[in-house]
Amino acid sequence: MRIALGLQYDGSPYAGWQLQPNQLTVQGEVEKAISAFIGAQACKANPVHTITAGRTDAGVHALGQVIHFDTPVERDDFSWVRGVNSYLPGSIVVNWAKVVPDEFSARFSAFERTYIYALHAGQCRSPMMNERAGYVMLPPNIWFDIDAMNAAAQYLIGEHDFSSFRSSECQNKTPVKTMYAIDIISDEPWLYFRIRGNAFLHHMVRNLVGSFLQIGRGRQKPEWMGGLLASRNRQLAAPTFMPDGLYLSKITYPEEFAIPSPWLENSWFPATVIAR
Image 1 (cartoon, one colour):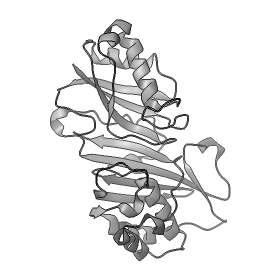
Image 2: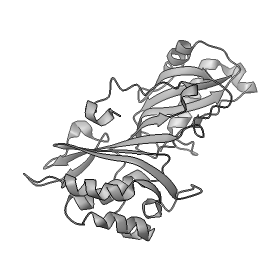
Image 3: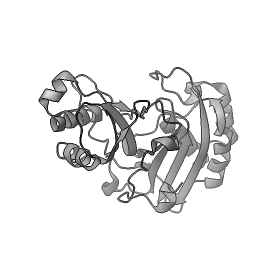
């Protein structure tokens, strides 16, 4: 049968989601935990291989990651949650589990993804948010130009070629993606970017955040964002911003699969950030 799991994790100890030789990865820890729960005999005949909705990079976190895997082992939903969690490190947790039809794919059935970037700004960084949020040093009584960033965001809405915000290591087949909404939420000393689209390129959100901050700090005008998009030239955009504050927030699927919403009750984000 095919099992879907909803995950949350602190990505700071890991070299990203995807399995890599001689590296600690989220996928490696999750597959090891599932294998331990279902037992060596079942794994020998059917090794555990997980498919994920979004392959997060090193240091990137998840509030609503979704994966699936196939197994001959039958357990009730809560047994999967309790059992797999018993073998996971404290930085990863399974929030829900359910049997899904064979046509469900955590990756290919998803039609929408939401990322949140949490940024702390001010005279001093917050040690409590180390590796949990991005940071920008700002002098006293200075804040970002939120109106300018919102104006810049309008250039990105819709279907576009996002090559200007694409990592040179990106393996995506096409740079053309559809952006549905970008919300910039100011709550000094916090700034949040909530970005919703059909799919994202490697480093795309972090590259967008870096460029937004150039505009928010008055170093570029809002129309610069439109020029970057049209140029399709990564060299013209801002450097890739730090991964610390990036969270894969939610994956959206067709209603017939009845995939649960992310477990957000324990999130430290304000309700205005996680609200749809």
